[in-house]
Image 1 (spheres, one colour):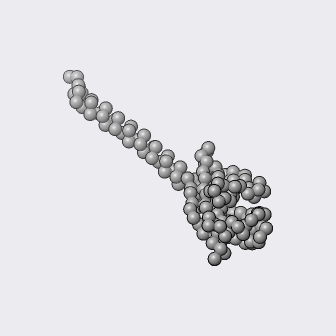
Image 2 (cartoon, rainbow, N blue to C red):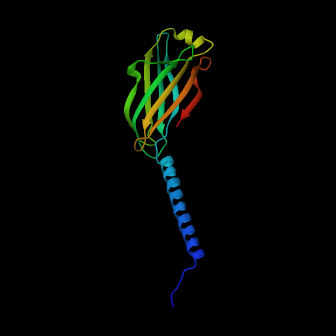
Image 3 (cartoon, helix red, strand yellow):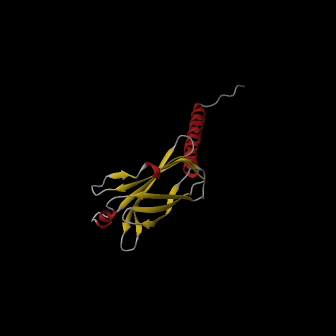
Length: 168
């Protein structure tokens, strides 16, 4: 006697097989995204301090740290001064640091000393003295990341307040 599979059983088997394949694909995509989020560098600024201030120059030290689980490659750090019209003016090229490898949980000290004109006017203006610290870096593969922090000088207290930050 020949065994015949009923049509409804064949259709149900195909539906279960397709649902299983769909679940496997979904799990793979979700686990890949979770891996990318967990195993990537995250660079942030842990401190931003004014070390020296005179009418002709200033010196600033920012401490950066990679709180991610993998190294950040080809790190580029650049600082911009925010002008009264809101535009960004880069500091001289010698203040740019690039090509840095920043390991997880290892602080990096970024110190710049820059000459500036009319610093007293910037500090006392209604807009205040603001700067942006921008950090660009490579993660795993070809993924590029950016972090930035905007600070404003508080002349009454003699330090910078964080205005806003951004990271992707």
